[in-house]
Image 1 (cartoon, rainbow, N blue to C red):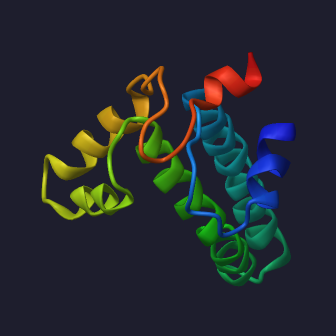
Image 2 (image 1 turned 60 degrees about the vertical axis):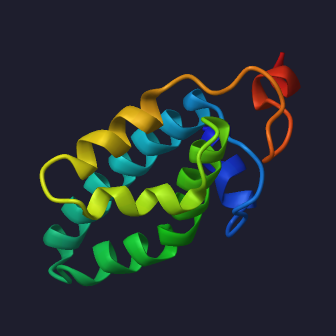
Length: 117
């Protein structure tokens, strides 16, 4: 659960680096929360308002985490727009997010793996 709260503490922080584990754990917690909110939204009959409110509230933390994850691989945060390329863009972004980060400090800061070790 701390992966989720740690990301929310850095609500709109686009600097630094984020480990793969931090990114994917937040992704999983966020996906589970979105499913629960969507079900709750359908049950109480407010669809899609609660879902949209939750998605909007977590948009900036998710974007910031994605940019920090790209920084860990040595890429600029602008690489997030590769997802807009039809067919291959989303796949390439997925590969970048799943790639191992650089073990040494880079222009975006020290390795987050060294901080957690």
